[in-house]
Length: 353
Ligand code: CP3
Image (cartoon, rainbow, N blue to C red):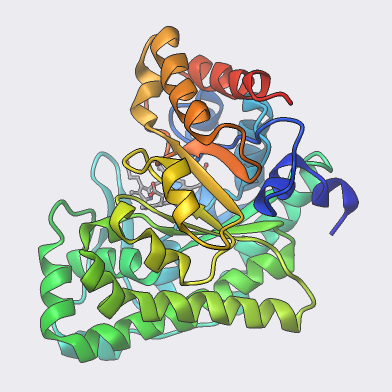
């Protein structure tokens, strides 16, 4: 890895090393809250942004520069990898992602295929290459993918869900088919992640956004083995290509099973705002780096409130090396952009060593 990238604040923090100030980036930093994004989006559909590297590149780089963030995240989405697996995915305005042919019974899993994203999604690798070439040489690029539970939630519910009734019922009562479905996700996610790593990302984040709907027991029994396989497979693949980039493991609402996530083998653990960082970090042996955890809703508040909430996070962490400042979940539409810009600046100033 180029020395300027290797020695950047963000990369140092992933290794738990001292930094000049705490690095910041924000999940969903390129999104509808930003006018520059809406302007590019007006020229095409959301899928166009995911599949046309020039558009993905423009929104990724603009967001990083506008915010002064210490890392950029590839513009793409968790769900398009499911299309070639046999899922009929559509992003519906005002409704969100919808799967028109969800898995509803064990036999449906038979039609779910794995695929080789190098053949089926070359545009994602091309986006990585174009973004890497367009970013400043000291700004790391983060690749990403979803983890099996979160993808299975869409595959089974057919879209976003509040109570995850169908997923849980499927998982508990058709466990053989559940495991078969998760295995197909694992077998697709490993080459999908490695494709991005080979194309040039400096770090990789695994999103398990909806896994906090489970109890620790259910996580351990039905989900953790699959997540462990993803991390092990990506590590093995990286070794074979002579790379070793940090893996970030992120979930929401997982305060009661952070230790189980930690066991999966990531380098950086994402925490949300239900989870005080310092006390939990100290309980997790060998964990070098933690990312989080401001409540994204604070960004709607007046600056004095937002600043107080950011201070709470920073006071809790106390400049412990290895902290990557982020939200506990993604930026929402209609968030005032100036608050986001001011937040990034404030964290840098307040944590300057
Ligand atoms: O800046 C970034 O973080 C870049 C890219 C990014 C997007 N989605 C862009 C996007 C990333 C990392 C994601 C991850 C993602 N996608 C997650 C995990 C993150 C999380 O919030 O937990 C999930 C659950 C998805 C699935 C998904 N895709 C949802 C729930 C939505 C929003 C639906 C809606 O209309 O509110 C999407 C669409 C999506 N992905 C948008 C963006 C900017 C908005 C689409 C638009 O322009 O209309």
